[in-house]
Length: 479
Image (cartoon, rainbow, N blue to C red; front, top):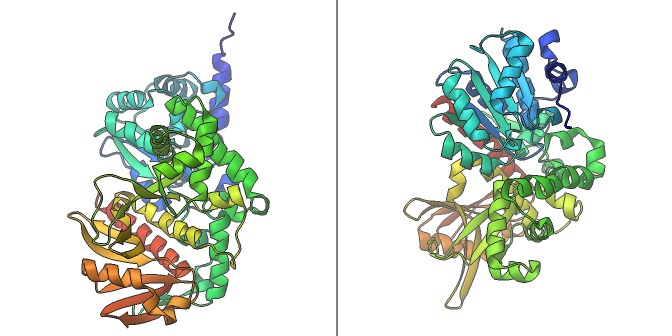
């Protein structure tokens, strides 16, 4: 005979998960964490009562979703919200397994002696653990019209797909990605140590590029996750934290449960191959040989890995900036460069890390949301001519607006004619300027009518992350 869980046990667990009911404060350990820059973008969405929509907070594991939700609870209380009008319900709690969202709301009413949840804020954390969550959440939004519902989950793309399918007009999606380099420095309050603002010209300049580059290498090695920024234990052994607690959980638990994958060893083997190739061009044929998997299986698994926000594929254009009808060649980037260090070892500043610098820069662009779909790379081999340009912005109508060549070297600053591929590409697509990243120098040169701006890779990463946060803030203001 199967024992039923007593209601008293469920009630006690719910009280334990919501200490703010008694203390008007979240766990002191959670209060120690500095808020991510994305918090100021999330709070207005989560606290707004109009329109009547649930907010779905999504992002990969360990980027700070749960911490953000608790900071959200604290700010609500500090702003005058009654503590009992906010409930936190983590669905990965074993005692809650098998309970529908409606049953959890009923449990909340029982514990707090509420007849209705009007004016309350109900937070479902890690909602992907409930099958058909999108149907249940939509029903709650429709029936509990005066209650604000917030859900979070780690399988970002899978959540978004279900959100769009079943939550049209009912859900608002909010993506919390890994840390940008800008946020990495922000969490440590290091802006003023490395940068000086020149208000007259509206730009920033770096004070000490050598020191900033050391921070940039720290970011590449373990900077994508807020928790690892301050933990010496994680920095000494990123494999244990990032590989075991993040990558393996996604590969061995999340994806198999979401997509019914039977052979997790196949999926894991393919991911390791893709991770090692981050920033390099690959083909399905190459992957099939390296992994021993069929092309169709590889295509399906890549979709799953993108859904889990572990990788991002980037399409190729030719030397005229034109896309291809058939995708034979593409690049794959880790969405967080520190996953590379966790799998294959830490890197040093003197190492050949061009592909990881390129990965780090692409990780900033991933924060751009749908704009990331404009980002391509160019590669060609025609009539004895061949070349590559790392980042190409392709707008609708196949118009190339700008491009960037990523280098972790200073030699091109004084040898601009060695940038033959970049110069030729810009001439063919009609660009009169381009950007090239360096290791430690900056400035401008003009070559064959092309103005080339050289900027340190670390500085470019920092400014890019800062500007993308500001761009998101402007978008949120107009919603």
